[in-house]
Length: 258
Image (tube, rainbow, N blue to C red; front, side):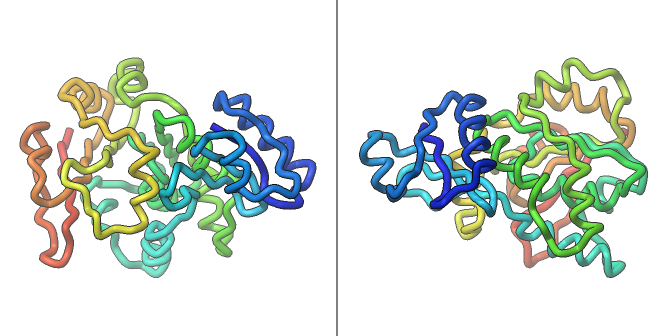
């Protein structure tokens, strides 16, 4: 993988790119006057990470760029700010002051909603096993500006760890988190969601295991929650009570109440 900067980089962006190359085992290449396509061609590598003023972007072949953006999480948080309800928050039993373990962070969309809901007295830890995705999202959570200070604070409060959820859960004490949450890559992908397409190449696509859910049951004080396609067989396979979805959505949640 190549790591470089945007055009006319600052010294801070050059230092960030060099540090990312070391962290991810990539090759740092100074941008100079070269185009990104030119760098990829000369280095004979289709994987490219770019550190720029608007964050980190990852390119893999002809796939759209992967970069951090709150997307629907921002819409959902604005609804919470306006006093509306959020299905995930209701189903999980999430309350201010709760501790949440998001085992499959991805772009951290659900972690952002949880972080806003639990407030400054709560805690959200999000786990991401894939190195590039972790780097992109960690940078975004620390630097992205939503224009709303309380929402920015929710982003900054999230603790993002690079680890596989099974390894983390196995080491956690009993009843050490209020809510344990899973949003794995769906067994039945929603290809009509264009925002998820860049994520598919960078995310961990393995299915959840019965062992992981057993650990989650041990760790959670209130609920274990799974987000999946409404027609997924994962709810039955893993022992979740399926929530009744709205007719207009293909996504629903399953819950295990402790």
